[in-house]
Length: 395
Picture 1 (spheres, rainbow, N blue to C red):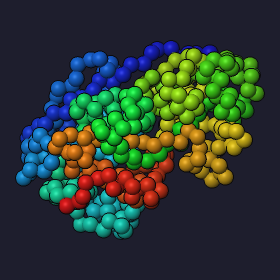
Picture 2 (picture 1 turned 90 degrees about the vertical axis):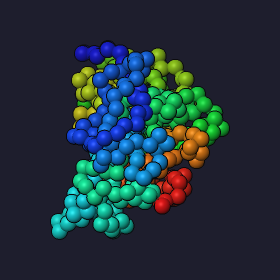
Picture 3 (picture 1 turned 120 degrees about the horizontal axis):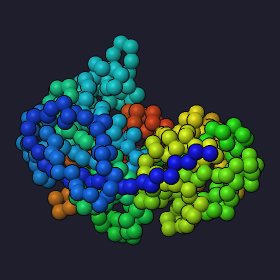
Picture 4 (picture 1 turned 180 degrees about the horizontal axis):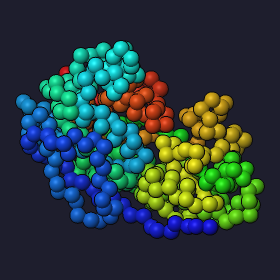
């Protein structure tokens, strides 16, 4: 059996840097991520990014004449598909005649367009709700957005330290930073943009051998080194290769909290850890006898979610099942967070740049295109309204 045993490291945090000048091709890289160095102890990246449409930066992040600052986010690889896709759409500033990415044409219409009905380009529209001047130019939004890829813990630290505007996390900041609820409420605002029915997956050889369902207790015993061979749970006589996420990732924190009962629970059964969901998916594909926990967006034919029996209720990875991992009652279901920091300039914790960007996700359009199309779980209407109430008033 082939095993991948390399360790995993953190991703460097980016400083929030205000910049000036016209946007170039690199400034419209919504799909750009900071993956070149995975050591959280390394020096911060001091490179600047041009602001769009000839705008200069404003230190408090609010509009000041034509001045705006690039919005930066970093953190969870689970939240990354949502945040990064949103950033790509934002930076494209597509016109309403597009029909595929924004608006409507004779052949296509974006989801939720009937609720929006605007003649503005996509970023122009959402930014204008908070008083930003429109550019009316494709690929030149009122301000650019950049999304970095690291971990939930890194994203939470980065927003805490003022290095980014938004910290993406798939685990609660209380668990990631060891804060109390009152401390978290004093320091940040928690914007929930979607949910993940965190699955447990096995490699194709194990799934094909008949291990398509485990109990919660069996999974706990595997990760706490009490079950070490697939034959002990009805599978082949084969050693279990247990894959974990990096400590400090929101996926790891959530799994420990929900499956093992504590964010500090022992996981002595883990054979190797990886820093990102993409790496976990690759490891499951490349190794026989594998089991892992990860985000829904990264599952597929070669990385198959299994059903889990929690105290007599079987949750299946099928959206049409009576009980499914997409249900809010599924024990591993978790919120996906975008945290913003409370400051003297923004005592309510969210400036207008952050509000305009986050508000885009809290629409029917955003929930379908950025959440559901990434295989995550859209928020119910009452939760969307709750999240909208956390944003500052629109212009």
